[in-house]
Amino acid sequence: MRTPLIAGNWKMYKTVAEAVELVEALLTSAEQGYASEREVLVCPPFTALYPLAPLLADSSIALGAQNMYHADEGAFTGEISPVMLKDIGCRYVILGHSERRQIFGEDDALINRKVHAALKHGLTPVLCIGETKPQRDAGDAETVTLGQLRASLHGLSATQARGVVLAYEPVWAIGTGDTATPADAQAMHAAIRAALASDYGQDIADAVRVLYGGSVKPDNVDALMAQPDIDGALVGGASLKADQFVRIINYQ
Ligand code: 13P
Image (cartoon, rainbow, N blue to C red):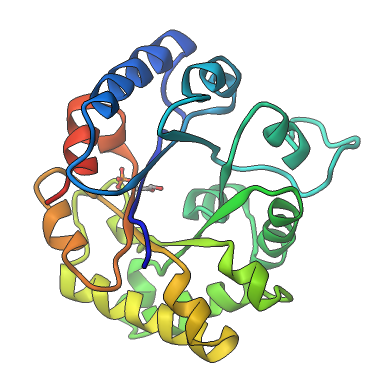
């Protein structure tokens, strides 16, 4: 079945020295083993990727980036390409995070190009989707979230879709401490899986991991992970502190 994935999105936090300190603490805990089978991923800022890569190379913790541009190379000042991320040992890349959508104006068409580029270069996209508070209050949460899903995955074959990780991140739950209830999160995850089944077939829907993100903390992770369609967590603030992230990794 689906191996749970616990991912840390460090956002724009941590100098290189701070990043190394955090990863060393995570590696020490990884050596002691986890509560059961699970994958762990950290997504530090770009500046820390290269120094962290050798520390994580032979470990059970995967390395990912938080964004990328879709071209292989070119005159794109300030951007990073999938080729560059592969080159330094990244296996994952977060795409379509709501902060990219809202602050940096990324739309579904751009995110779709990035998803294709990531897969082309053997990077696993962690595609983020989710509604805002006004959209939820208007009863549009599912329409918005599934719309983002379909637009972002547009043109993928079933085989390619199998290689994507999804993250349902309701925007109103990010950084607010106001997490979705396990029941609300489960309902959306089930709707996402049903959409995958209708678009790509039940096999693919059963294989794709759908993470939940938005104020995941040590005290709510167990109830979220107990839901049948929640296959992991994309953790922001609580992934910046080793003790909290380790507790989340070792959810019961
Ligand atoms: P918080 O866990 O800080 O709410 O952030 C969630 C997030 O945006 C992960 O991508």
